[in-house]
Amino acid sequence: MIKINESFLKLKDNYLFSTINQKTKEYKNKNPEKKIINLGIGDVTLPIPSIITKAMSKACEEMSDAETFRGYGPEQGYEFLREKIQQEDYGKRNINIDKTEIFVSDGAKCDTANISELFDISNKVAITDPVYPVYLDSNIIAGRSKKYIKELERFDGITYLSCISENNFIPELPKEKCDMIYLCYPNNPTGTVLTNEQLKVWVDYARENRAIILFDSAYEKYITQKDIPHSIYEIEGAKEVAIEFRSFSKTAGFTGIRCAYTVVPKQLVGYTNKGNEISINSLWRRRSSCKFNGVSYITQRGAEAVYTKEAQQLIEENIKYYLSNTNELKINLEKLGYKVYGGINSPYVWIKTPKQQSSWEFFDYLLEKANIVGTPGSGFGPSGEGYFRLTGFGKKEDTIEAIERIKKL
Ligand code: PLP
Image 1 (spheres, rainbow, N blue to C red):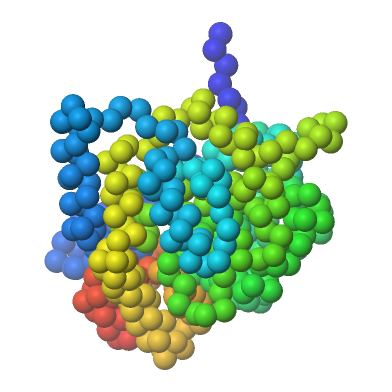
Image 2 (image 1 turned 90 degrees about the vertical axis):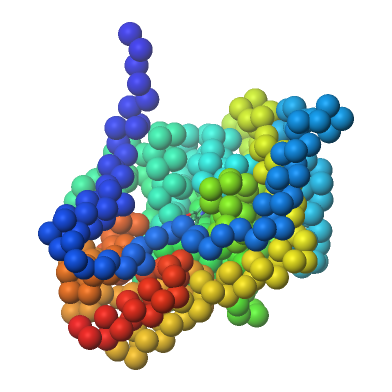
């Protein structure tokens, strides 16, 4: 008899976006004449600069020529791309990362989920709350929680680091000892960031407790303020305790193309039951060579072209476009008396729902009264209750119209 991994049954149904779609569809059916504006989208909408797609077309052509055809590539990624990542993303910030510490992949989502395989099931996991759900769900699947406690809206055995307006969305160190700590900055969904000093607190904690930080910086390119770290490796000692995840998705518009990378420093060690040190880099390399055959050559040539001067300028313009949307939302909603967080270093604004409304009540209110769709904060975790996420990924004219509609409420 084939037995299943029963941990899957512990997962909460992923009903957030399906409920949003269902409610939106029902409203549309009842009110076909209304134009709905979707500011809930977490996907980029602007096209990819053609210098990138041209590089991909050229790589595609190479495949039909015997001289330039390529089959399986290196699992860790082609050297031409890892070299660019090393120089452009780290070297230019005076961060010394070796090419052998960079692993190119098909997404930060898979990497942030798969990384948990390297660690023993007994490790105590800490996540910020609200959170990008992948970190939590992947650890539930791995068996790191016995059960979901309905009354607490939390999984047993997982440490939730509450990030709410009362603590300025800065997670406090856990009271209990944690081993695997997931941090995402700039944060999805709150749009907030940590300063060097605030991030250093976590690096120091991890060093003292021989813990590991799994640092997701998928939105790093959205940072506009000067004193905000773009990489966790800007913090002294972080290479001993942190893995960093990056993605071309939200920066270069690769959500459909799929390319990302993970940095696993050579200094980073984990421990056997006997207390012997083992290189995490060698474990991740071993895992990759066992379960992955690399990202396509065509995609990697596209990612390489992201670093050309022309592409960098166009990507910067796209990011400015999204950020100007979040800026408009922030300024105008604040003028209307809303409490608005994030949006300065991130494509997300995080709103406190007015008049003590629940996240879903506010969702219904905005949909029915202004025909605007957003994302209820409670879908990202219990501390997201009473908050609401809007994104800057929509069209400029739609964002402006949404603001006008909210003004009229
Ligand atoms: N990390 C965070 C925090 C995200 O919000 C997302 C996508 O929304 C991802 C990772 C996924 O990145 P990728 O497209 O590279 O899988």
